[in-house]
Amino acid sequence: MEKSTVYFTTFKTTYNENLIQKLHRLMKQAGFENIDFKDKFTAIKIHFGEYGNLAFLRPNYAKVVADYVKELGGKPFLTDCNTLYVGSRKNALDHLETAYLNGFSPLQTGCHVIIGDGLKGTDEALVSINGEYVKEAKIGQAIMDADIFISLTHFKGHEMAGFGGAIKNIGMGCGSRAGKMEQHCDGKPSVNPETCVGCGACYRICAHQAPEINDKKAVINHDKCVGCGRCLAVCPKDAISADFSDSIAMLNYKMAEYSLAVCKDRPCFHISLICDVSPNCDCHAENDIPIIPNVGMLASFDPVALDQACADLCNQMPVTSGSILDDNCKNCHDHDHEHEHHDHFQMTHPDTEWESCLAHAQKIGLGSREYELKTI
Image 1 (cartoon, rainbow, N blue to C red):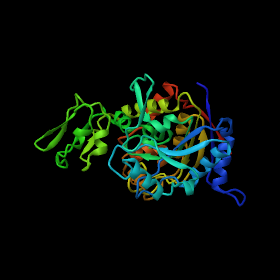
Image 2: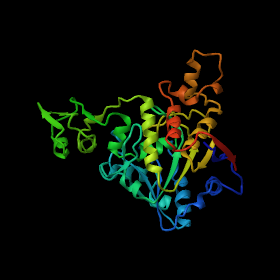
Image 3: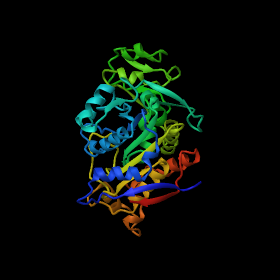
Image 4: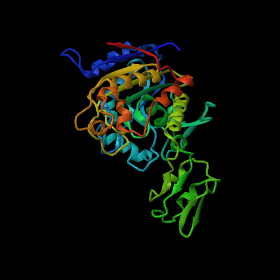
């Protein structure tokens, strides 16, 4: 497989060029203008950040991308899909409010926000990919309706996938609630009997009569359940949740295949910013000390090469004193190696790994792990 080109620039600025201008130049150098945006709906996939988290990308960066799309004649919108877990982004209204509170309003970004999978996370497109693990991906309808897809990713650590890069932002981020369940587990939710009040909302919303009310408590019959996620959206007590039972490798394989479903058959462009590299996902309602210093901004047409380049650059960085990574390194029994010889992300979360995701993504044709890094 041929090497892909990944463009890179640091966060260093001059009196003549600030970070906003530098991001624009990076995109231009990477070939952004080779895409025909004229009158095209353009989805800009970004993580708006859980309320309380402050590590997410600043909306100023989203405005650079949106303005550039409009400059080239396109019709941009910022998007993300509702979360599977209970939080400030579990439905479109809460999600929009959180996005606006975190600065992603049309006034700040120059474009509108559309929650990709609708009000309750059930507005989805079924995308046939006939993958090894996913036959039909469930992607937010608005995202699939777009003519062009752009990922704008905050590169960071992740407690399940090792790191949260472009593929995580695309595959998991663009999945509807049912799509997220399929990636995380077998797609069948369960009820917490201690929280359930037996109101029957889950029974009434289900088209397959999977929830059953016994002794004023709901139980979901997995033989009937199709994993659509509607019950999670309507439960007034947040008593229903997905069973995160699959292995890390399986999660990574499915994320790669979901990313292929999002990106295939249309123009795509990918940007990752390695800054405020928190140990955990921006889905957390808090963020910890960054595990490494800020690195820079990267762009490519290849999300696999982009993730590989980001990981390689991060692993060349020193460890931030006082971070979780620093604590884990100090507690590591392998004292024969210095910090820089460790995989920073695996050292941050020892039960995780990220290589299987990129290996599978390359295998299915999403991109190449071989890349040429061009510094601008």
